[in-house]
Amino acid sequence: MKREIGLEARPENLKAIRDFIEESCRGAGVNRSDAHDLKVAVDEACSNIVEHGYKGRRGPFPLGVVFEADEKKVAVAVTDRGSPFDPAQAPEPDLEAHWQDRPIGGLGWHLIRRLVDEVLYESAEESGNRLTLIKRRSSPEKTN
Amino acid sequence: MEITMVRRGSITVIAIAGSIDGMTASSLVTSFREQVSGGNIRIVSDFTAVDYTSSAGLRALLETVKETRQQGGDLRLAAVQPEVLRVLELSGFTHILKLFPDVEAAVASFPA
Image (cartoon, rainbow over all chains, first blue to last red; front, side, top):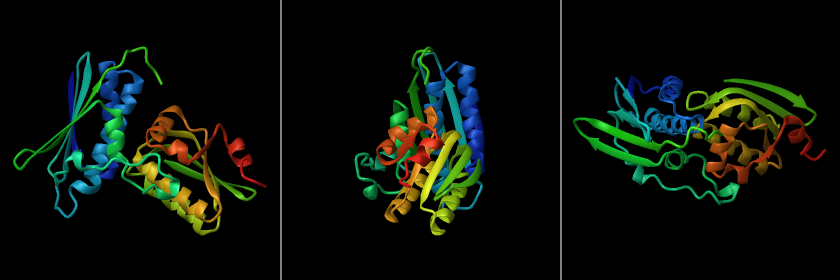
């Protein structure tokens, strides 16, 4: 099963992207727990593009989401034409730090890495940026 | 997302309904900041009807926890739902924030 959606990278479109992931997961029979994890991971990836990807640039600000599911896994590709950002550059937060020492922000990539099994990133001048998030499907019985 | 506020003695109960994301978190930040700048540093946030949060919600919570605690108060959460709890846990926020099963328990947890 493959579905895709294309929108402008704007904060008001984040909900439409989450709804798209939810509907796609439902259509592909992905269990609720996996669907939630994917929804957060894709939302975080798209929020980064909305917030940082097109900073200082003129529109349009294309943002694409491609959902592909088979019986073993779900792959969601997020594409944009903004500034490249390799997720390998995102530092891991110190989750054990005292509240006074926890910085505000910097949790988006951490959540993505925890919520999906694989994060692939490619960026090219001609084709733009493509982030692929892969989640292996857990058994259908598993719920929250 | 909808935000409603009720005073319970020295405590402000802020009930949130809906999804907290990169679009809606700013109004939550504004509500929290208004309370803290008005001297209301004992806050319970009722999460009964919060069905979703991204890291944008975590930023709002951490900022408010820091601001209130630095002034001798606190932000405490009530009735966090399982999917939101998962995001809090994965981010280490269950070590930072005090969570209660309901608003009554959260309100009662503040010293009189």
